Length: 211
Ligand SMILES: [Zn+2]
Ligand SMILES: [Zn+2]
Image (cartoon, rainbow, N blue to C red; front, top):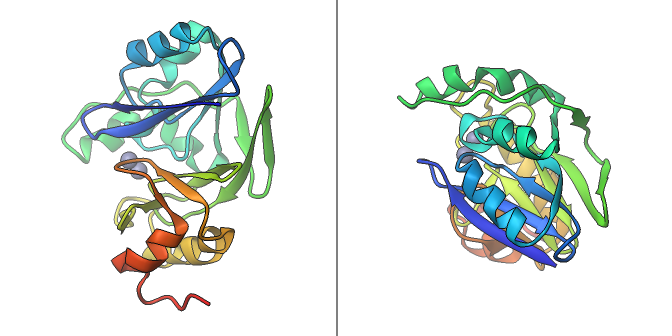
């Protein structure tokens, strides 16, 4: 399997390129910026980009949606509750004193529990609100792409519009942790981890009881 991580944009988002093998259908998760660089990697592996998956609609995760869609025709996929953020990247970026690149509208909405199939790839969708209303995690095999919900040793912020600390903690405790210690976490920012490691070391999860 191809699983490449590119760190993109000023907020250093992890953009993931996933495909079963060179020459096959691929997805990109969170192309936040640097569309040219992402496309270069896709081309180098002779991949067909079929879908752009957004873990959520914040400007730092969607900035290259437009570029990649225009170049490849890939479908933009997001949870419906974060869809209003796609055209509003500029307003959201301004909260950070930055400029955003609005995304075209979504081609497809995903819902909790759905299995999203793209070519030979499949992803289970977990709706994990709290960082944003429509935040999701995508699981494929033993890998969970957690967006800005859960990081190595940290959690997403919940003070942005649509955020809720309580919802975030419920999402992590009820939807992510039960997946099991052996699941690898590929977050929206920073290094990878595992659920087992986060249960032991993440200070934000210390209050949870882990059976
Ligand atoms: Zn975010
Ligand atoms: Zn982010």
